[in-house]
Image (cartoon, rainbow, N blue to C red; front, side, top):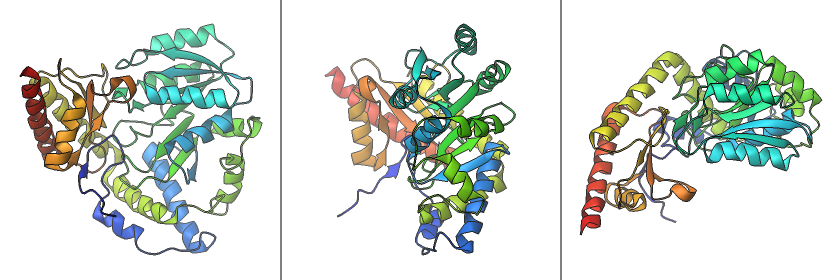
Amino acid sequence: MVRPKYKLYTPGPVDVPQEFLKELASGLVYHREASFAAIYESVRSGLQKMMLTKGEVHVLTASGTGAMEAAVSNLISPDEKVLVATAGRFGERWREINLRFGAFVDELSRPYGESIPPEELERRLLANDSARCVFTTLTETSTGVLHDVRAFGEICHRLNRILVVDAVAGLGADELRMDDWHVDVVVGGSQKGLAVPPGVSFVALSQRAAERVDRARAPRYYFDLRIARRYAAKGQTSWTPAISIIYALDLSLKRLNRTGMQKYWKAHREIGDLMRAKATALGLELFPKRASNSLTVMKMPQGVDGVKVVDICKKRDKILLANGQGDMRGKIVRIGHMGPVTKVEMAKVFGCFQRALKQVRGRAKK
């Protein structure tokens, strides 16, 4: 089979640097040996540094959705009430997972493109004392919205609620200080800001959340963090892990932590500012009111089909952007710029997008 050759500028997965690809091909070790335990401990420590937490971290062989399910199944009990703050498809995924595990879901939602105002979250929590866990997203991949997780954390800490954050898309690109911001659970994945192939995800727990894991009564097996905790004490995973991806993840984390999170966030903020400035200079409206630095999401002008714009970029320039999801397909275009990308590189990508937009717009006027 001939694989298509194009550069990925989607909201994930992203292109994997050659040095990480070489690590993937370096051969396997047995995951119950000391040599793997050393790598696994290095990865867990690297993730703690990246998320700025002293809490326990568990690495899972699963997509980001697997980590979301692990968070739900290890925190709630059937018939328990939770609050889900949604502003897009991945916030809605929190709702669906909680419902599958028997929770009663109180949903606080905003239209696509808008973020949840912290004061609305506080009002809802004050009116709903029985909802002890709050589920939300840092970056909403489907819309490009960035939530004020710092404010959410302050509110939840003051009101004694557990804050659970899907940071799969934003981790690395958008600032997140787990301990300082009173975030109790963070879930992330390998394939976005860390620029490693998909297949590994992780869950980080505060002390409060870790204690709740022992009390939760939802059914769990593969994602049982009590089992993961016992194996982690030996430097092992509960089950056979994605060994090669963990090797590449270790390399990625070491490079990132050498750079430092402040510099990494700054680089993504500058790229985000550049892309947003180029979009507005072109007369395009940004879709999110409060934008993430991991992707740029733009509304398409009247009569312009975003699907055609993305298709031209793929066929002519060999770069892959992303369409909108669900009802937003054709109405918005999403350009990912997470991981080790540069301003020069992204300026070229935007130029390709601009030419494709001009071509589709010209056809629409005929």
